[in-house]
Image (cartoon, rainbow, N blue to C red; front, side):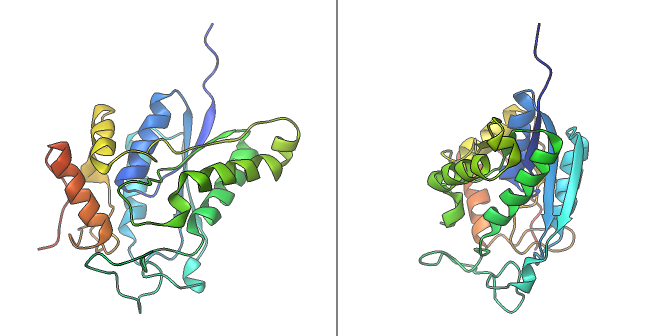
Length: 227
């Protein structure tokens, strides 16, 4: 007799990586509770994309939590006075949002504990990415350790797992994985400076990785780019 499907919290930004991660979790038989964040990001189209993906691909629920990281600042994604770079830069770029994944995972952990779920999925990647410190395998391992130390469910014998199934994949491999699982990537918005219609700039880090990924995957890029 098969075990009942287990609930999982899936962080869903609306971009390619989180979309693919959602499909992986669903393919593994989890009941996916999608979680997105309105964190003061300069482009809003990704939240619309996340909602469309969650609805079309059968999320059990989709929550959008407002946390307002623009009050902290320090990132081109939350402060309109800081330009999004249009060329590669040295070191960690200004698109890094201070402690963003830690904040997101903390809220995902709370949501999971409230649901009685022990599995959290996120689409971080340590290969084709911008060098953010909170996308590394050691960070994921450390947060999983924290999750099991800092929760009632963990102390009482539950075991939280932080799943990062894309962490060692190239962008082209992520795209190929998603396509095999039925992803319609025209729904996804990855651009750091997308307009209100979700059209991408083609020049930021996220766009460059996306363009390169589709080219290396040998498939057509369905992204809508601004003229």
